[in-house]
Image (cartoon, rainbow, N blue to C red; front, side):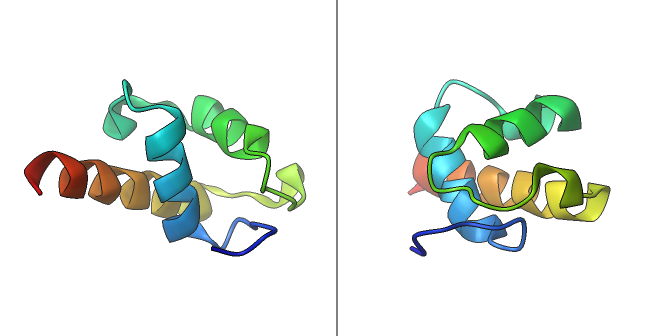
Length: 73
């Protein structure tokens, strides 16, 4: 996993969010909350202002896939 994460590292962020928030269903998270969760990750070093709906959606889907893998595997 890269040392410094950016908005383009959806898969790595999804893994970290699934570990940091195992009690949450990523598909029920509002993008405002998702944005906060991402920017609160210690490895996240990108500009918080450069996110957009597409990047947040990619992160949300990566997080969802990680949850699915863990619960079905």
